[in-house]
Length: 179
Image (tube, rainbow, N blue to C red):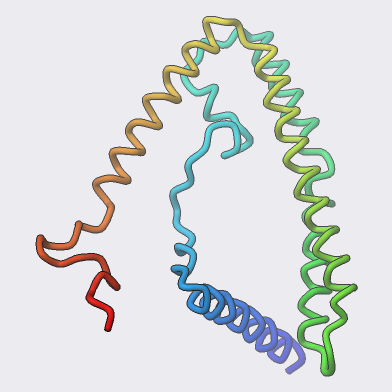
């Protein structure tokens, strides 16, 4: 019974947050954010940055160095995820508590989450720089060429998947004569 209650509260909090986000977007004449999808654009960010290295002719020494860098980067990640999850839970608890919301506490919790995010970005950039420093100029040029091709293909795919333009004679919404 208790688990069902917690699940119901969590679902309600998620739904109310999504509804509030759409309401805020509508109030400011902004479209709601796009739904999360399976595609992600990225170079160094996805899968820890290893996709940039796909197809490069790495030496065994380079493989070993990169593996060591990636292993070191994974240390402590789980603790950060747990800490961020606990902070999000505290935010949900604050928002679901009766009475006025303690905005100072809410600001403190969001600042802690932002600090965790910033540290994560800094660690990922540090890993990217270390891997960059291991690669030869030729390997970097090859990786850049591959990245450019992938970006061009993604742009083509985005163009193909974009909604069609309005038929001729029909303007964008809101272009009608105002009285």
